[in-house]
Amino acid sequence: MPVKKVLIIGAGIAGIAAAIRLAIKGYQVDVFEANDYPGGKLSEFEQDGFRFDAGPSLFTMPQYVDELFILAGKNPKDYFNYQQLDIVCRYFYEDGTILSAYANEERFATEVNLHIGEPVMSVKNYLKNSANIYSITNHVFLERSLHRLKTYLHWDTVRSVFRFPQIDAFRTMHKANQGFFKDKRLTQFYDRYATYNGSNPYTAPATLNVIPHLEQHYGAYFPDGGMYSIVNSLVKLAESLGVIFHYNSPVDEIILEKQSAKAIKVKGELIPADSIVSNMDVWFTYNRLLRQHPHLFPKKILRQERSSSALIFYWGINKQFAQLNLHNIFFSNDYKTEFDYIWQQKDIYHDPTIYLNISSKYKSDDARQGCENWFTMINVPANTGQDWDSLINTARQNILSKLSYILNEDVSPLIVSESILDPRSIESKTSSYQGSLYGTSSNSQFAAFLRHANRSSAIKNLYFCGGSVHPGGGIPLCLLSAKIVSDLV
Image 1 (cartoon, rainbow, N blue to C red):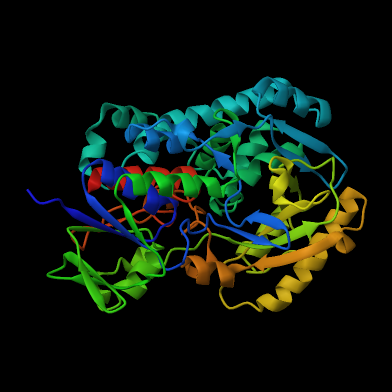
Image 2 (image 1 turned 90 degrees about the vertical axis):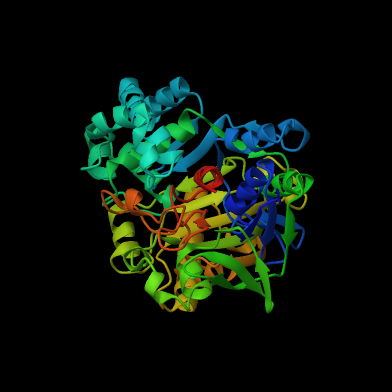
């Protein structure tokens, strides 16, 4: 019996993971990547003596990475290592409050009580609710396709359906968080988790309050070698299983025969396959690779609201700041207005919440001696034609002003190296429509259930993985999408 061939479009983290799983199952797998490097958004670059992880910087649920090595009969430690963070993130408020989010629940609850005044039990009850939502949604929503009858025949699915009211789908995240806490600073703390999938806590369902459980219960980690070591280790594993990566090889078209995916066209050459998996943003998969077949487009899905994007300044800083951690958040003083600017005005608020990642805190050679590498990010709207050059200049000034005020030192003269990533370059480098980081937003009650399926309902042998399809964006969910796809294929 001949070996079946699967072609994967895109070497993002989901495409690599899908390649590994399918190779383990005995398929011949080739991956075609437009860039000259793997990883998609999970990339890196070096400049002026500084190394930066260019994309995702928070690593949670490492078991999903380890699982790929274990499935292949390998010891994960031979390929990939990481350390758990004692402090997940440090939070800075405009009123001078500084909150360290300890990984240990008891210690964190005590920290909140000490600095914010909320009772320890308020935090514990909140995290218990977050864990409950996870127990209801995990096996049904995260680990299986929502678009197969088989999913609904599992007993744990039936149990979850009966517990559906407990996932809090009919309140917003913000409204639910207000109900748990009296202090607006802690409400803001938990509202922030909406940004983990590019959504708005004032409209997104409280079901997303599952996210704190993933971070608090399972912990956050720093990979040895930085975030890009995840990509390097998985590519090495994939190649050891016979997966072939083709770089500088953008796919021009998916070839159909009688509504069945039969081949891809790369540099004028037709490459046949038994199955095709697209790790490209679903919007571009249809509008670029299937442009000859608009009657097969899932038009309603492709019109869904996109997630937010990001504006990132990569700064080499000629100083080390002892009060900063690996992950740091500098909160806006008016969170509601910040999100109104992003979602209603498609603009950037003058007082944005700033995320600052400094990998040199854990990997000293990521920066010059005595320096730090600052990954400085704010959430911004998706690209719909704004004057980004003007927005970037203004945002840069506002970010520097805010950081200088809170850190009590003028940051501007400390910058010795700079690079910028904005929604336009995110779109061009990663084929993410409008530069959205997570595909569609989750700003409505059932948006998460309306994401594009992992298998086309109109085109046979065509599958999808990655952040723009079920179950969503972020490294853990992209890895789970690969798991779902490998089961479907």
